[in-house]
Length: 328
Image (cartoon, rainbow, N blue to C red):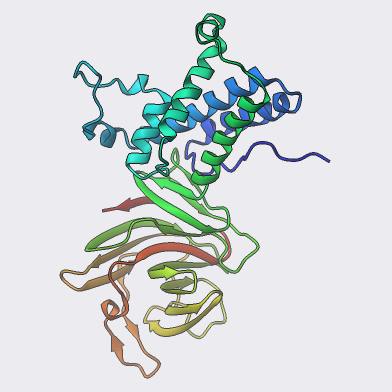
């Protein structure tokens, strides 16, 4: 029975062509690892890991250059294109994109040397062994890194954490795909940072018939959040509403939108949350939605939100596409 040697969850790579290239390398890596080709395993594993680091690092390039550590020993600024794998690990962990582990920078520095053994003269100078142990360590570094980053979606410099399903962001076409999965939450992701003062979101929503899009706010965990629902299913008394989740997979409507049905096909959505001015606005296709309780009393949407919590999206039913996402 065949078993998986390399993790292949690469949805955090938002360049689709580059993702395909990496997948080809991971498949090749499985082949050489199975026949104990230790040199090839190390060279391919570490160079693939370096490629992943460079792709993610490019998102945060400007932040790298602001770091006091972004200098050479002679005081000159480092060249981004020539950052080593241990440099990349240091800066990415410093930005908390990947976890900081004590002394791990030295581990990456060690494997930078091993990768350079593709040149026999370099290996001769070090006179270090390459066998199954080193090959397994290289695979371990690669799999651990992919396993950690596979929880994330990068949209610009914003990091969304995947809670359920298999959402996918295509940076070329600037489309976030909320796909179907085997749970009621389907593709569920939340912005990693908490909303402390203000946030403004704008995006174009493609919501097919019989689909549901939920904008999540006041998120504490998967069993404690609120959400604004846009629902294109027919035969519902009131489809657009505000719901409260009090346990996983259970939510109830507490407020109802004046607009019963969202527009068909593509339409813009704008959301503003400002704790200083106490504003929480929700605009769909240029219309500002207002909400009422079951007795018909108009309610202030701002009263439903809590500070220092997270926001997110999920498609409760049907596939959904979100494009041209702007976050300020």
